[in-house]
Length: 461
Image (cartoon, rainbow, N blue to C red; front, side, top):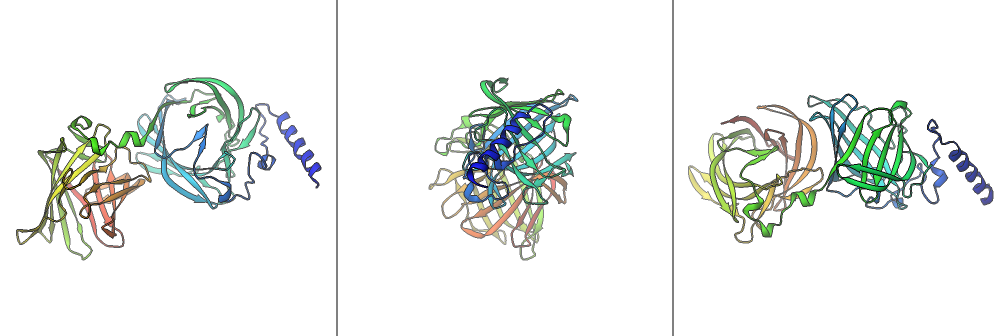
């Protein structure tokens, strides 16, 4: 077909599609129609077609940001949805996609957790490459229905946001036959929207259509420079409104050079690492040589002032085959945002009841040592952080792996646990994974490429 005939063919197809755009119309413009200026060929994508970041003005995904939505479902349940733009990426069909963790709560209880994967092409369109969806009841995963990934079982990516949306455009947002077939239609660019986060003019209105659930159509509204403001069902009462946008960097990190007591609170009640004076945690396990170990952590009522901050003193005693081999005083404090900081330790290695070394001891503010964060207020998957810094002595770092792990230890079985990966540049082979249960704290540690393990056995007061 020559160029002139090709152009006429596509123009006719476009006119036919735009002519049939009533509310019941499910015709979607093939992606090839806009191949030259808007959409790429879905069957022939490559990394060269995509850019590193996602900065579409209506759908920008900057790692470290949280979007919080609240509303009421038709049945009357209060709904809260937290979208966390993680630092993690996933390669799908050769394309590097950004992971977004979406947690949905009904009446305060987690009911669904989803990882969505997005990437932006060089023209500015944001593509949707799939999701890993988990429905949760009483802390247990009961279904993964709705999960799909482009390239598997015939599934193909779709476009979640056009680079230049214009009224009347229809497009496929996702396609996994019988599982995920959402479609979108641009309604207008002039909507006025008021939500708890603010009031906005000239908003983009999109109609979302799901052929698998014809009665579930909804309108979504987006503000340029902000993103999704509001989602509301067309027939029912369901509604979700934007209430908060938080930058993790602003929320998490204080200026280490300018810490003072006003930045901190007097308790440590982070849900994943709580230290209440009078509480004792006992851990048991084996080291990589098979020696039985026991670690007893006592949260004392003592306070140590470091860099002007009142730190809680935690005494940790480690035993090997019943013999005391190390005793440490660790110093912790929680900032007003909920992050738990680590200000140092007074460590003593013991042999036959005698102190033989204090190697590993450090104190923030002395000899260039700086405090680190031992537990984040918002442990976002993919986030990396420094736990301590005393050059050449204490340089531990950590990375948040994610949530959703079920862990059994002598103290009990826990679901939806947080997992972190810790490593020490001074000992690059000593990689350790740690697990934390909400409302309990640290429950298990295991070394990579080793049989060494430490598990929570008892909590007493």
